[in-house]
Length: 232
Image 1 (cartoon, one colour):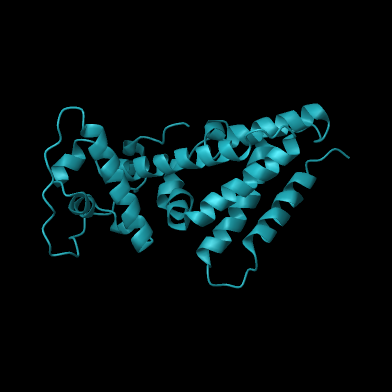
Image 2: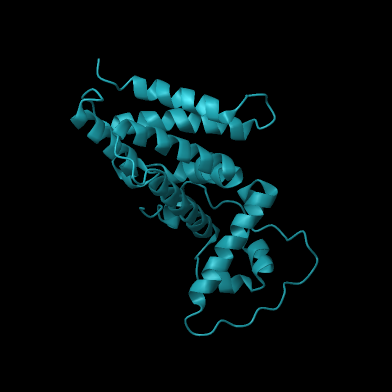
């Protein structure tokens, strides 16, 4: 999957304007053994895991400060800056990791499925499952200022994000087979994504409303979108 935009771009648009707030805990950070040669990657992974856990627990990236992450990992703030030059780059890396997990989920969902329309359906369902199973991560990825900066990109640049390549290929194959009408595959993929993203965003933003079974609404939205692409 493609890398997220540079942290300097994020700063220019205000993604890094949140200062490190004092930690709410009065306990000193647990002592962490100094990393041995070659263990820097492990510390980087621990930093990202700590950032994600704070998002899950608090429901917002505003609580993800370098100080809070350092305290949770048990390292010093300067140790974090060895891996991430600023808070924005740490948050982008956290989102990038989630996008890679999403890409794996979509690839696994369509494994062995030849029919392009069935692939579209399963891709949409897998995308929705990932979003609803990871609501706070998805909110951070796609529904706040981090996402706004991340997706200041053209549709073509987004092909490697969000499983777009998988959807574009399914639509291309559907057109070739005659199941779908000739159209621009990338725009059609964007429209299908918009259907699913809209539904899961409603569920995540208003989790206590009586929406019924999410799977039913997701399938309805998917089929409506796909039916609009079919050959007449």
